Length: 518
Image 1 (tube, rainbow, N blue to C red):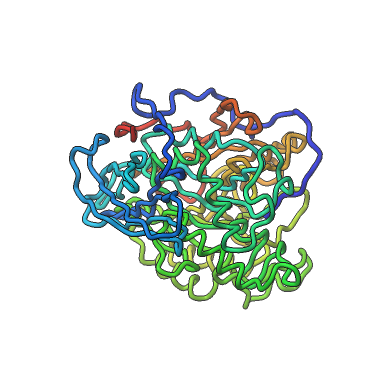
Image 2: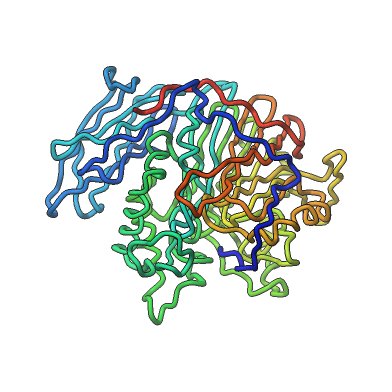
């Protein structure tokens, strides 16, 4: 989704929370992360993702001349010096997968930090750090939640900040990891490669390669495992299962071909575990504390968007955002979950979007019966500890989920069935500073909202204990300059066990953390 380009000014708004300067971000005393020396074979660094209690995906890419197959060694250890190696092996990569490497390392221990490295062509890669997920009854989990990283709009200061938060269990990426537009078409702070819009497999591969050479993105991948899903711009703006607003079959070919190319490049370049490159919805169980359901509200089963708020399609019972199979999978998972918190990681805003009197038909607002089916499941089963994480719209929102026809009581939280955290973009622009001053008015006119910021970029730190789930907004002063941005804690909001609504809170302190990858 692209937000409208609206007039701006230099006025600032950070929601109704007070601005507080951030303290040290490492969570590990005086430890600091230092990127390794520039390699020549491993130009795109290393990454890890989709952690399980006993396994994790390790990723890299080999840059070498020619098209011959290349043998790549790997090793994983329990220490940054790689003295205590627990597993190792070799794999082969070639042009068929764009010389990317993905290893699904098994036989690991739960809730354990590991360090890993690849070797190829006589060179060693940077050392990466990853972590498996816990079993049993963990006492605390911490994540960074991110989305919407338009390279053309600025620098990845948010990614660098997250790399330095060494106490995280994982980074949850909600999509728009890349954008498909050509140079200057959407943001002109940094140049893109390829300079034209991405349409073919080669185009998408080049765009990922260009992004992954960014040192801040490389560093956050080096320090943390990712759990990621795509949104629309990994393919084309406002995509659905059979088309997209930004795709013209007459000049850009069959949409199915473009969709297959985008999914293949994503599967090659992201540390994701997926036998079918087009099927990315999956579940991660962090003991009995969190069940994380990563959804595909974009490409798997979404019916075409309604034209506008008056389109009768909006209330058509047959239309879906997830597809019937994914909807059934989610219902079964939610109702069988024994976790304290059931968390959906997904792409588009579930709460109504109360700004400029718009109905955004690309969001759940455009698929009202599908949303009400989900709400009915939550209330009738019932499903406690229901939390939605959302990206897509480059703005920050914390609020309470209220079924159609119900009334929210701001004093008691009655009427809410769960909560939603909408994370800002890492670099993608919101509504601009001109509209920031309308934040308090939006909040006051919509009591189900706890927090609004429509201008600044940043991310959310999700801190989960056995008593509450908390989302803390970390916003950035700017992303247009290469100089490191200032950071502001803009507000923290908690869902307490036994309740279904947010309360204002104080951001949780950093936890004790393992050593960084050197």
